[in-house]
Amino acid sequence: MTITSDVNRVVADLRQQVCDLHAQLTRYELVIWTAGNVSARVPGRDLLVIKPSGADYDSLTADDMVVCDLYGNLVDGVLDPSSDTAAHAYVYRHMAEVGGVVHTHSTYATAWAARGEPIPCVLTMIADEFGGDVPVGPFALIGDDSIGRGIVEVLRDSRSPAVLMRNHGPFTIGRTARDAVKAAVMVEDVARTVHISRQLGTAPPIDASDVTALFERYQNVYGQGGRHTEPSEENQP
Ligand SMILES: [Zn+2]
Figure 1 (tube, rainbow, N blue to C red):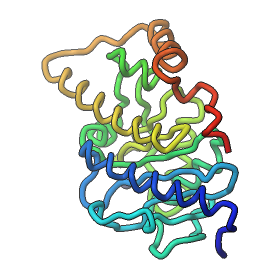
Figure 2 (figure 1 turned 45 degrees about the vertical axis):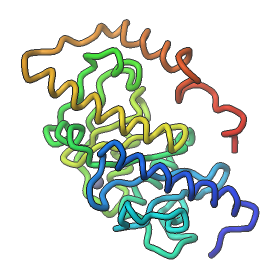
Figure 3 (figure 1 turned 180 degrees about the vertical axis):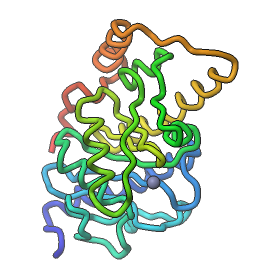
């Protein structure tokens, strides 16, 4: 099976974007060796673009990125897709608004996942970005839909774009792959800061009404709009 010619250009652009976004994972020190992956939905198609399995970050090229269907089957590409492709695909199948998914084992966020402890909303930036505590997802074995199911179960009804999968690490989602990468960077940053704050005492939570006020302002007013605003025209399928 090969992809049809009318999506070739869109897929080529996404291969480049997804390749470039993997450089952000190393830039922010969210990954070591070949761990971690970024994917993007092909707008309007039941396809995704993702990093190949076991690929060295230093030598990744756009052409290495593989195209899969939303069941994780390889559609176009030379290399095997990431071993986490089934989880990404499950998220795209069940969350229509998601255009990008990221997974890392970034140190501090993964340390919270190891304890199975949500990152409490004790900073305004956590309220801004995550709309409350960063939640923990269930323990799940790799290889079938169970990781994807766990991610969707938690994030479907959450304001958070990040979930700490228990005993594993963070998965993040976004309207675009870039938004999902931002969430992966931010979750590691707040995981580290709250961890450090815990060393000298307790960190009191922010009142729920203030969390909502902060989240609404940040997502809808601040900057160029967050993931809960309508997609701009150039991002429409
Ligand atoms: Zn993993």
